[in-house]
Image 1 (cartoon, rainbow, N blue to C red):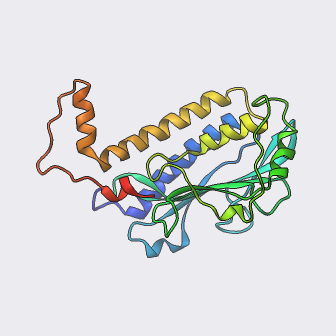
Image 2: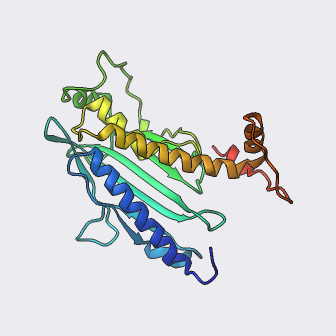
Length: 253
């Protein structure tokens, strides 16, 4: 990034582009999907390069993220909360996610069925993880409404006290699920109402996310990436000095 460019304003510009692209894709997938906005976080003064929140925001309260409805057979049965806090990557070259929160609620409930979170700087929990809150009965109840989705019986789960406290790791910094993965699960497991082109839009979003993650993974272990390219027949000329491996990223829980 050029020294003449203000890092916060440039981050906001990139986040605006991301929000527009993400909104367009979501509107291809879901009925009545909201528009995502990019807003500079109030605490950006605490970060040398700033932080920008990307989410569907309330018109009543600044920085309040709106849940939006998910319909099953034209009835609102669930709501979805999505918030992505964006920042610069470690080299201040690319837009990165500092924190992300995806929460799925049964309609009318204040506690999510489950949530999928990512923390760039986790404190004692896996960087990417899933937490399940909903009781078995809530899940079974919701699975009764859809007229499509996975056929057959689903395995039952015993009730576990405070199941929501268990953090199930989901791939670390680079191989975590994207929002499109979660949406496809909701579509196939619960039969939520979608647009005709939903699957293509999901696949395009997933492929774009994984390409970006692959680039990041290559920067974490460039020598390993070079070896893989050589095995495919490419000629690779390493720079001098060679970049070191980012062990802390590869080994992160």
